[in-house]
Image 1 (tube, rainbow, N blue to C red):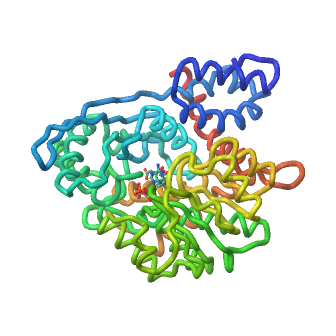
Image 2 (spheres, rainbow, N blue to C red):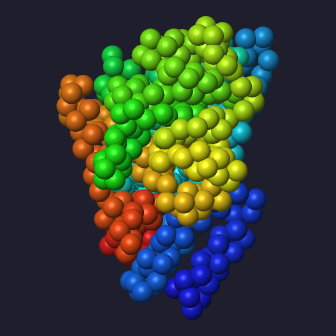
Image 3 (cartoon, helix red, strand yellow):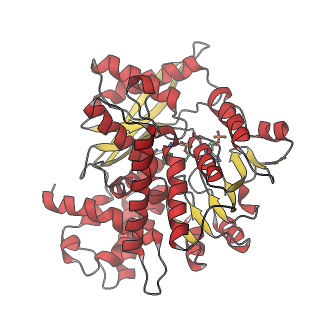
Amino acid sequence: MMIGNTVQEQLDNFMDGLKRRNPHEHEFHQAVYEVAASIIPFIFHKSVYQQANILERLTEPDRIITFRVCWEDDEGNIRVNRGYRVQHCNAIGPYKGGIRFHYDVSRSILKFLAFEQTFKNSLTGLPMGGAKGGADFNPKGKSDREVMRFCQAFMTELYRHIGPFTDVPAGDIGVGAREISYLFGQYKRLANEFTGVLTGKGLAFGGSLIRSEATGYGAVYIMQDMLKYHQQTIEGKTIVVSGSGNVAQYTVEKAIELGGKVVTMSDSSGFIYDPDGIDQQKLDFIKQLKQVRRGRISEYASEFKVKFYEKQKPWSIACDLAFPCATQNEINAEDAATLVKNGCLAVSEGANMPTEQAGINLFQQSKILYIPSKAANAGGVAVSGLEMTQNSMRLSWSREELDQRLRKIMQDIHDKCVEYGKQEDGTVNYLKGANIGGFIKVADAMLAYGVI
Ligand code: NDP
Ligand code: 2IT
């Protein structure tokens, strides 16, 4: 049972306990608070969830695997990193979620991501549980061979914990097509098995069309749905995007295809502002820059003679729509206030948890259309789920078929957010809708299993 006589008391007691059990894990506390603040009011009078202690069970990962990754760099130095896989919950399907290689990867960051993934995967309607993994490895400046040796060393431990019916990893920050190929090659070698154990694979070896595009396209599709529901469209809107990796690139591609004008992109060094708008040709330059040459976004500024704002984030540029697509906590309260002040209508989160809680509060008070990451960026994992389906059937669907399925899944997620998030005054609280919509299926499966 939750302890406390009011919703607020229950929330406070629950968060106190969570923080006590998971000290110093600020990102994990933040992600859990954001969900608990929606779920506790929802289950307050639902004794079946209360008695089963569902929320406490859902905030304790099934297991966390931590391991040493030892590899040799090009100079012959022996290097050591820490690898992780957080298998959060497999109530509704095999564990599923990305792998992140970034120097700031920590237990807290992966726990928050795996927790979020459980709700996100449920929202897709596909049978996938939640997980996340990664390492505190910094791929920047590493040669291809160093990345290959790191991936092989990482998989040499991870392979015994995953499998097509157990846990199916994919990409995330720092893990794209190149890394997935190395990881899959090593899995195949060790397991002596060709199975769909990773998603985001190359098209030659079981990958799915549209997977690269899916997260970004999905974030724009759900923005389109949210705007349509409020009698608006993307056409003619000025759009600010952060990041310039996988999610940002395909967010920009779909947004400009639908007639939006995207004026910014960024990386960890700063952002570029192109008042004329980024067109497909300029975007192709970015794809080549980031996917092939692995260069910096500042090169765009030199190439197209626009301004580069060093060490700054793009939120000060006036816009109608914002798509944070870089990383967690990239919009703080001040950034959110600036977006609101400049008349921003809607925010769709391509990145995971890009907005701090104080920023979310501001968006909600100002009635901006705000759709949280677990709904907005679910298109990526949704097409991963479709990759698993195709692998099981040993066939490949066409681009059109996959795009239509992705489109429908995003629309269904939008509608689920409306179903559970519609307020008495007629407005939609998409955050509440996404949290409750994701929770119910997982919680009901857990109830059915009894005490496990
Ligand atoms: P990429 O590695 O392809 O790109 C990441 C981008 O974000 C780069 O432009 C990077 O800049 C920037 N970035 C990363 N960390 C920071 C930081 N600390 N400060 C400022 N900028 C930063 O990753 P993805 O595009 O795949 O992922 C972006 C976000 O989307 C993440 O939050 C991820 O969890 C989320 N996501 C990804 C999905 C996918 O399918 N790939 C699915 C759903 C969500 P730099 O190169 O300088 O580091
Ligand atoms: O955060 C995410 O949803 C991802 N990085 C994609 C996960 C996946 O399994 O495709």
